[in-house]
Length: 102
Image (cartoon, rainbow, N blue to C red; front, side):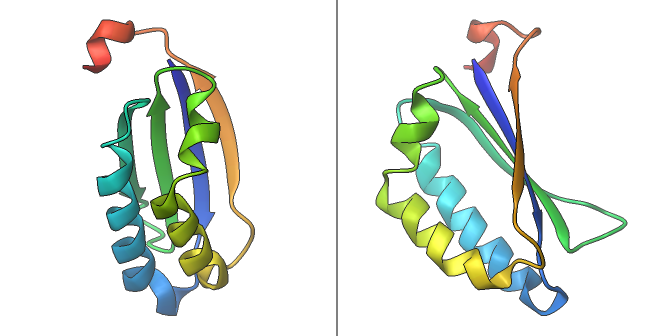
């Protein structure tokens, strides 16, 4: 599995719009064959901060994801909502193994 945590800091006035756009992107993303999981989570003590938890089946799947219409729409929609550029950290799973994600 190839796991990406995308860290996003949005402007206070854009929280609800960012959530709506991100949920729509996540709903479409989980339909992709290479996506095992796509979570949108919000920090409790700082609601302008979000993490997208993206779990891909292979290291090639994120590039395929970025070619989809729903990702490109999300990227363009939220670009001006961000208080700073988003960042990402890549991981590999230890537990559960690949079957544990299905």
